[in-house]
Image (tube, rainbow, N blue to C red; front, side, top):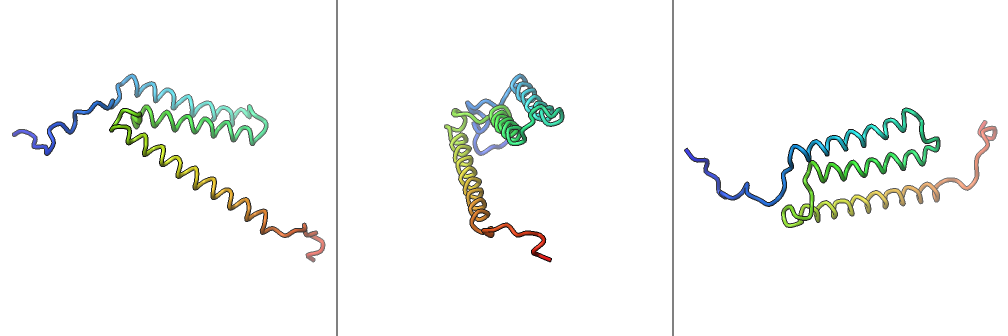
Length: 124
């Protein structure tokens, strides 16, 4: 009995579903992009914690891009570019939400704190 499918061409598409080579490249990059930040923290390579945090976040962003390209196969050709447009829209919404939240929290912290520093001896 033949497999009845409503659209016989549903699996035929020009999008690349990946090859063994592309999956191995993605896996190797993921391991490297995980091992380097781990080494940076464990070996205490960067003394300044703010710089170390920014470097680790940079590695995280690059790893997200590696996963999107090598494992989720997001590119401008797949599905007429709509997957890439959806990803870009999602990233824009996340950046707006995160930056807005940080902005509000910073300004609440700045504007709601008392204007003077209390002396612990005065509290007794």
